[in-house]
Figure (spheres, rainbow, N blue to C red):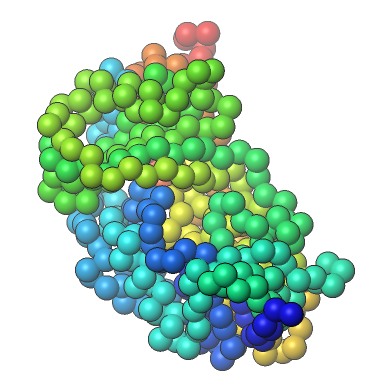
Length: 396
């Protein structure tokens, strides 16, 4: 018979969403356990490592991130490059580039210091259910089969969320594959994020370049499912990108020090991020900035809100879907104001990058507006849509 453990709140996954969920639940006086399938939190890295407005989220969540886990805290602008190398004006931003190997561990420390327990090398095998009510999981921890009974289970287990699947939670179908490298020896402005667009190297999306220091950066491509041509690999697309007239100069003499791959959502959030005894946070609920795939800040925030809602439900003795729905109301009324408009931004951006000719003209005419649409969504979508209408009138 498996060993049985009992908790108020069980969090599956110890990334940014899981750590903040565990911390919030523990702060709410719930007996909390976080499990993580990895043996070493934060490794391997599957992320561009950028967090816009990191210090705003620190204040909201009541934490102080270890400065050692931030590789670059001085990113203040973005520029957009067309397929032929045309450059937009700079769009002002405030972003930090973190070291996920250290950052994820630091967030886990905050959860532990708040009173949450943590089990690494522990893989969920299935949820425990009575009817449609989730009340724990079956797992394997260090090779031992165990059962963890919990009043609320929070799925923070990333893009391929087994908690979502086992709980019958429907998520979007649109996603993109990521293929990136960490480089050293780059020629770059360490305070600026350059974004590259071009059909030959990043069909339907864009290349990100996240400067981690004076001469180092995470550089990668993301390609939507269905956009990768027959017999074309992500490796081939990245080689095509390295021939870009601007990128080739920045990459000249650079050396890759790590390769990272992964997948993330490129669609609307899950239809529902709550159920009887279960919540979904971060990538598990597709709560990401879909227009550019960023997820760390949204994961931290949604995880924290999930942990709060779980602790409150436990405290009042009602973990039904009706009670836990306060979580979805909460995230939609706060971070949802940024997340939800981005669904439309992503759709418009896919139209904009249909041809290299259109991209070249768009960067020249409205490059900063395109960047603003990718980052902010609201207030810029209509400007880009109007440009698209005028362009089509002239060229179609």
